[in-house]
Length: 397
Image (cartoon, rainbow, N blue to C red; front, side):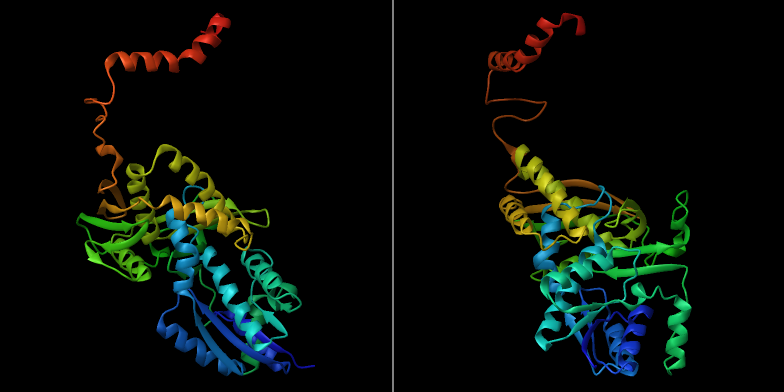
């Protein structure tokens, strides 16, 4: 019996096989590409051409880049989110919003099933399946590559046998490109003693000079880059990526725990996230109180973990977002970074909300908010619990 099936279509081998196989079996296949900023216009045009050649009755591109920023990226910036203090949760966070866009489309057209090309060994199968299960209860989920343990050769042979030829050559590295960075898998990363060579990266240093980068924030959101105003936050991110990538900034490797329980190693290049997060963190150091910073860091760590582990729909997430949003009310000003090939350093900030400008005192210099005797009394009171403890346990001094 024919089914109306929506395929989450990226244009790669697994999703191309899925479209053709389901179409050949007599189903009404809709190939849908959810773009969160990682596809070029040329890639999207080629996707449409190929999807129709593969047998899809309809192809659609769903541009959810702005939604991705509004509902996730800005909160990751507010929280300075880096998984394991390293990885900016690049493409993995995009998968949630791609899945949400796909399932909305499926619900709108009354699809009987949704299909994706994930294997059984990674995180993406969980991100897609969980989103579909929650947002489209009762709709069948089809995963041919996972269920049948298909090899690359089997998929290519099937496509060729049914008249579709394309360059699906097995590359040494696999890439997932997104607005929040590019992840790199395979190659030397399979050996835990090795790092990635220069040729593994897609972006290379084209500048040898040093320069200053000024990122201006208003309530935690980017409003200017090098004093050029941006109303479009996505465009601002893209501009920072362009500048940072010219220095090959943001390269690293991350080892972490996958959702399914095994360890995973991934390389990445993410100039914009690294620069934006460190600039934002620098501005917060001068504009937030000690306890604002502390508690924001705690909830931001959970926010990033939940995003990575496919828990975006957990009801606590908007509660965390509310706290992160509130914390940004005074995070306004300009952070200054010094860029050089393959790295950068923080320089300083300019903000009307800079708490280091207090008239009560200047660290290590002078104070007007207390006297010397008051300082001595404060220190003595502060030391009271320790004096009590070591008074009872003098042998531990």
